[in-house]
Length: 365
Image 1 (tube, rainbow, N blue to C red):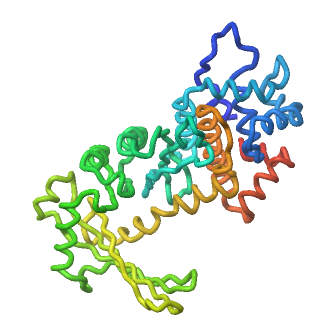
Image 2: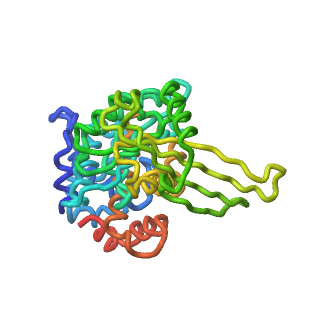
Image 3: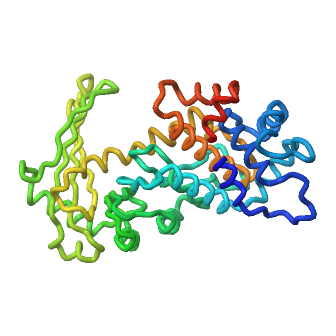
């Protein structure tokens, strides 16, 4: 079973003479438990006890099923980097020869991990839009450190031929340069954290004005009692002096969002957003990269919170909470790659895995 082979590569932090339970058995049991909907270490231990006969077909328990305390202690000792490597290695196997076309980088805070003596856990995910997979994960101590964590996350990825989209935290010259050096392209949200460049772009677009020649897409969405129109315009800015300071910068995409509020005294409002890109201004996929960037919110973060209850996680130890978070992302990858084609909610598939070991095995092989 490939998943066990990957798990066996994880470095055991314990002294050899203290080991009573094999690390690969601990990891495999926990992964199977999370795939079956486990939320706590008590859940994991109970899963091991009730499924011991089935688990013993694939792993050994010379000293019986560990207690919930033992599961928690071992995951507290594990370095997050070891599980991050496990997640990446497994994701690479799922991707195979397929190179990601669009990689969205976005952060998520595990809000219920906050205690008086601890900051909220925050992590960065690299999300492959077309496959619906978490390609890599990087732990961040504080949200303000995303700028330093993004390059570390990018270093773990094969960006050749991919377009990387990042929100305003990643709109940095060094990050744009790194993506280009790794043979990728970028779409970076520009906000007023770069005041001079923002003002230059805003004035340039106002002078040029929207036109049929610069329009990339014009579409409508309806929901929440309002009609929303989004117009995308691409402008070549490679000749601007400030643009030359950014590696590979060729264009800015201006997105005009027009809101129609039929039940409000303010019937129509509009706002503009800007994105820097290494693609030419007429690249037809630019609107898709911008729209699809937010699939990481809907298809990853929302799913983790609603179906895998991540925002309700109450684990006190940072290390064990981080470990559980990574295993939840790995479980999501497994279900989407093995059973993403069939109907049914993720919650239903988690329940099915907990009730039907044949189905659980089909996810793992």
